Amino acid sequence: MIQNINEVAKEKAQGIFDWFAEIMNFGLFNLGDSKLTIGLLLTLILSFLVLFVGAEWIRKLIVNKILSRYQLDLGTRRSIGTMVKYFLILAGIFSILQTNGLDLSAFGILAGAVGVGIGFGLQNITNNFISGLIILLEQPIKEGDRIEVGDVSGDVIKISARSTMIVTNDNISIIVPNSQFIDSQVINWSHNDRNIRFNFPVGVAYKEDPQKIRQILLDIAKNNSGILNLPEPDVLFDEFGDSSLNFNLRVWTSEYINRPKVLKSQLYYEIFRRFKEEGVEIPFPQRDLNLSSGFEKLINKG
Image (cartoon, rainbow, N blue to C red; front, side, top):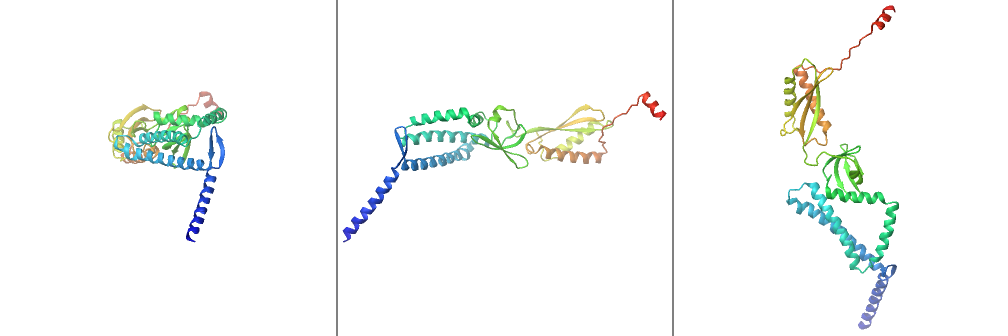
């Protein structure tokens, strides 16, 4: 009795196994000399999932653990990590396809079809992808940089295969195609380091002593915590204007690289306060009106 029950159970288990194997071996379509079955498709999906997750894990390991031991800034580390990730994914895709016995010659036909598609409608996508690789290799920009491209100004927070994400001072994310960084002029405020110099014009009346004005402006700059002591701030006597003596206050900062208007406002508030305290006159434009003799006679007649 027990033996019969075991035999029935084995037969049922064998039937389920055969049914499952039949489903896994069910052919969907052919790829060259290879047949794509449901089992192979599931294997490919699982393999690609492991590949992409593993490549991303390795990228983070390289950026946060390995390269952090060296004197490399965060943007450079992330660029290297992204290039390694792309290489692992590309090599892994070919390895998975070959390991599972797929006929890669069929993908040559597919690549040809994709090439035709690129010729007709995917030029921009291909251009942006290649531009992204050039950006990662040459590093004209990198994550963390303060840049201006076209009418967009902000901090680079992510460089992907097709586009770059920039966040403005208003916390607005702008997605810029990578090709724009190759084809257009790009201003990178922090390409070498995070220290930049700003120039702020200041005008005073002709009666004021230039040396006094210079000393007031330097005192204001040195008392601002956001301005660097080295390089030192300085003041240039810029020109004799139409109605004012014009000076140029030049300061270095790394804190306000993405907020120049905030620093300008701080300095101008303090300059106005100090000028009022010191009795320094801030001029306004003056214009002389000269009346011709003929026009004067016309007025006198009237």
